[in-house]
Image (cartoon, rainbow, N blue to C red; front, side, top):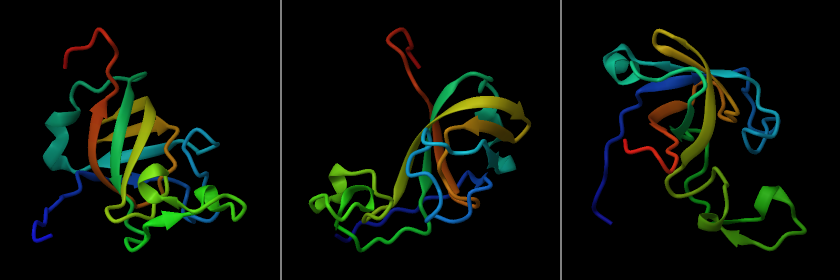
Length: 137
């Protein structure tokens, strides 16, 4: 595979979560509120984000291993080994995190969100709205 792609973070996660071993495995499993802190260069991209919105946040799981192709789901040794493309494991060839969050506050270049299980300092790649049947964005 000769193709390579350059991703530039648009911001970082600011969270009390600092240790992957003690962090919730999924955001809706007790993750504390966190902030998405954006680079000033993307300020215009935030202008229509509102409190109460559900967003999909894509992150680069910078502390994940990239050489893992199979895992035992949720680290449970009693479960069969499963290919990472059938799991939510952070350890995978391209460790892109996908998180559904709810916006609790908008403060300039910062969004306070619920249900984000990402560690403090995790790079933000992109944010997209969760669309319903009536949305046409």
